[in-house]
Length: 609
Image 1 (tube, rainbow, N blue to C red):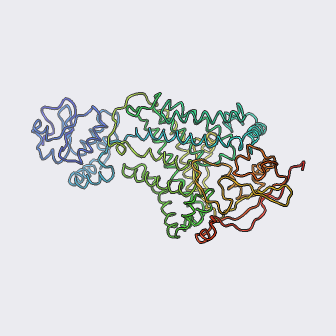
Image 2 (cartoon, rainbow, N blue to C red):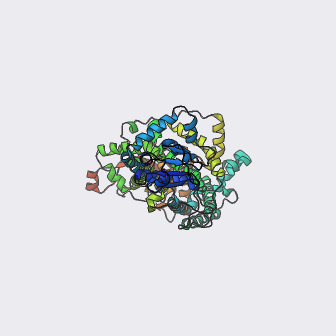
Image 3 (cartoon, rainbow, N blue to C red):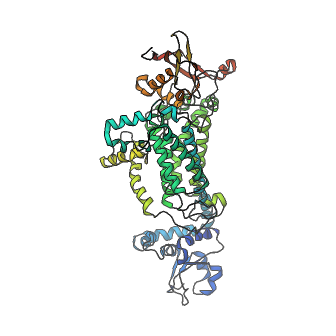
């Protein structure tokens, strides 16, 4: 075969085997990458124009014919074509300058070319029937709808509790909190506690933030002014998170803030998201959110094994989890009745999904879909057996960003029009957050790791804004379930219990579904039971408000045994709860069993009593 042709094409031409399905798949990928810089044609159509090249040579390997008549074949043709018109191509440079690279590349090319059927099967197994660079226009649109829905749930859920939790007459009054912070650290309080509530800490302003968040959530759901909505949603929810104090100390709150912040850089630069005419996709913005999902899942798994809790290593964690988790569901009760081998297998599966499968996010389509499916399945099971607010929904929403357009519609949009984020902006976000995220992940692997001083300093500056966070639910499994039962009395002799809406209380009350709403007081009562009353000042404040029959606080409960006149005394007992066995449930109708009470808070009364 000659090295030149006398009648070169007007621009570089890559000639391939049009009868080879494997070849056509990858030519589609290369065509997308090289754009208009190179023409492509099957040799069955153009071989007659270049008689200098035998047909068997065309069939053996791809040929690149450049506009000066030179001919390149095999791996060299691939690297030269992919680097054509670029300032720098690593593959082309390595082929020409790196010792041994060319020989290895040609050997691999020849091996693949001689086993095209096998190579085609592997390609199908990894990618399916489309190996082009995936696009995520459908996933982006549904992700923003899901994110808007989750924001809406979060704002509405807190709105109905705001007055009782942090209102002027609530358990932890916001004005007192902000005034105390300002008294302790002065003007630095604004930096440590970034909340719009500094402007106005009243109940009315809390309602305004919740209402504004709900409106912006609805606008995001329908796709109007997405960037503006995302900015306002982040600012509003951050303000409530800071103002909420201990009642917002949950990982799904910081996950929503981190997701909402990074979503700003994936949002299209348009007044409206139009399904039939999507805006260009910001690849770095997509990567930031996919990396957040990786961090969330991987850290959630590794911290379980590095926590020192043997129940994760010996696979017995679920022997305790279903009945010790804060707000189990009735399906959680049934799951606890399952055989031990099922629970042990479930623990092993959880660890595999959380630790190993996150790495599949960075592999071809089939692997990404496997990871996404496993993540979704895990979140569904967790959500069916326990009430974790909007955590499971938010994780599933992030999984949407692993499903590319080919999966949704078996088609793709190749040339979207319109403006996009300047690449340097999400690049700056990546440069700033990646070292912090890497250190957080390393800290999950090595809990005793000492942060380098510059990183620790920088993380301390960003931490109040919840932009970069570590994750890991249930790193240490709770082995007991202490429950606080608050009782009131008018005379110190006859005691009546206060009933909460969702937490364990009456033994015959079935564990219920409350997610995606989060009853934050019920949740906080679970944490309070794990420590002493004096370690929970908010609990003492709750007792004081009950002795006043404060309406905003009492409405957080299911039943107030003193509707007309507040009790003179209040006390709290601590019981050890456990799920009733199947036999006990059938015999008595009880879902719970509990032991003898211990004193959590002795009887107290107001000073004027």
